[in-house]
Image 1 (cartoon, protein in one colour):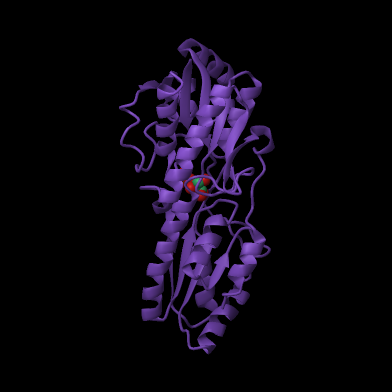
Image 2 (spheres, rainbow, N blue to C red):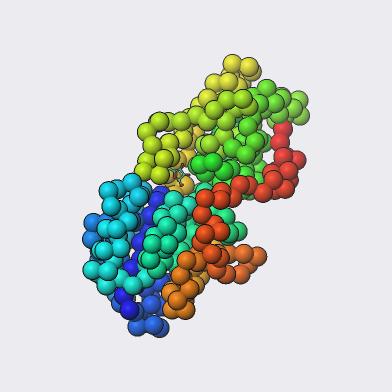
Length: 342
Ligand code: F6P
């Protein structure tokens, strides 16, 4: 049997670890022929494939990015896109596809599955906003990078008696901000799930000053909006899935704080540093488990499912129960973090 594998959407540390596991077990244990589909769904639309052997899947465990590339191609936005995909998969002899992606890419897998393409899915995104799984791979690496950034900002903020704002990714959820803020001891954590009030933030800064702490660290998720306001966007241009580009809430907030208080404020936008480079040990292990579980699902003929991590176990969940259902942050965890605000 010929099995295709693709990665779509924003990259996340650990994609190559998934590919390695899928290819290794597929070739070695099941005797499948493995074929890489380049740049997500684009590769199937345009017949852009590469053959994957043991050599191409070796040495890639710690490597960031994806050896297959990625794209935000949405076949349903292309004329006869889904028909082309079915036709091209058939022509290439691809009988099953392992789809590595976040909500957009997996949403396509769900629809293509209904049209007859046999897919199993692997949850990937640094945002950790996919339902059905406790963790997507790539998320913990992003949290580790954001935590290190907070640690570094702490020393310079303290030395200069400044407010330091770290803007992190996460789209419509605050998972990275919350977890990194907890780990990095942020004095305020702002997330999309809880629109902010700048005066309240200033009162936290003042409370710290009253305790002799004349610096503060704020972490803000890119999709956070002020109470009664809208998200701050970098560009209104939308991708094929209808997403705008967030960016700028950190600078917005920095200016608002300086307007209200006599304290120097600096802003750092962490950006794609959160996605680039090597996965942490946790993500390498999780991605490897996901890859093995995904090819096992193919072998069992269990299509239309996504591998998932629930309560320390790898399980599989029906993809239809997952797509389109954003997983927002655990507010109990936010309550714990807020004990340390101000
Ligand atoms: O979904 C992952 C993510 O990194 C988001 O956190 C972020 O908003 C977006 O992708 C950035 O996308 P791009 O790489 O296209 O700028």
